[in-house]
Image (cartoon, rainbow, N blue to C red; front, side, top):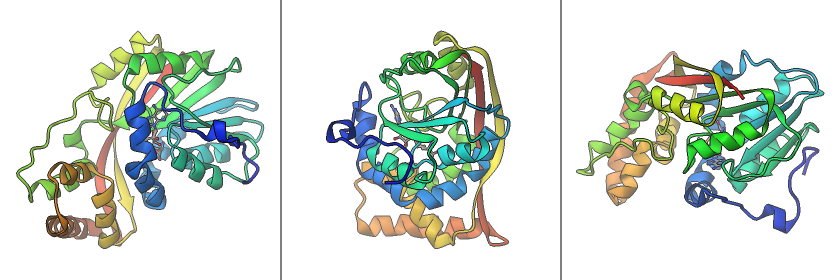
Amino acid sequence: MGRCKYPESEAEQMADFGENPDQGKFWNEEPGLSWVENDRLMSERLESISQLLLENLDLRPHGRILDIGCGGGGTTLALAKRAPPSAQITGLDISKPLLDLAAQKCADHENINFVLADAQAHRFGLQKFDTVISRFGVMFFENPVKAFQNIKSALTVEGRLHFVCWAPLEENEFFYAPLQAALQHTDQLFIAPGRAPGPLAFSDAAYLRSLLEEAGFQQIEIAKTTTRVTTKDSPEEDAKLLMQISLATRIMTLAEMGEAERAEVFRSMLAQSAARQKDDKISYDATVYIVAARA
Ligand SMILES: C[S@@+](CC[C@H](N)C(=O)[O-])C[C@H]1O[C@@H](n2cnc3c(N)ncnc32)[C@H](O)[C@@H]1O
């Protein structure tokens, strides 16, 4: 273990799924392990979105910053590189395997610590945060108003919340391209997940605004932005990733696809990844909301 702080005792290491047991199970089992395995690939793809989230943050000396749903710690580390060295940074996540990876990645940073907890139910201490950020880590709450109220309780009076979440499916090639590749090979219907906890839960901006208002946030800004999710990986690597982390993964599970059908889906994904490759880069349009609010 490096210099960053992480719970060591067995009791502290026990996963606390709080009020989100389904998400706790999801992110500590196979899907969470897939994110660990594919951390480098996802980090590269989400780099442009990190830039959008982090570029305008006002990070002050001695400030306290919280990264909610920090996953493998990519944004936590990026924060440490941007913030003054006197800043204190906490990464919080419900997934132990992802936090283990984050702790490894941030091992050289004394000013980073990690908390294994459900952000909706966690009792934040008396020391408040000046800034809370999240890259795609706040759309998984059973009760989003309660979760945002809890996050607000962790902020100082003037504290700021900044996060990024996905806009609608049809504006995100990164979601619908692999989905279509899977749907070609099954009668399984895709049922839009609506507002259920998941990556697209906040894709209706008016609904998202109403949640933040109900939780008591002020000066809410929701900016819709289109960028590109880009990789220098080969089409084979891209298709392999999308087989494991995409809406296609869920369709293949629901359709109980066997090896032969999955191989067909893989071939379709490979073809579409190859068709997108230009100048050694594969890219997908991605539309997100960049959200900012005051406590
Ligand atoms: C899509 S991943 C994003 C991870 C990371 N922020 C990134 O951009 O690479 C969502 C993250 O939210 C975490 N998460 C989901 N529900 C949570 C909850 N109730 N409390 C804390 N973290 C949660 C997951 O474990 C996962 O790491």
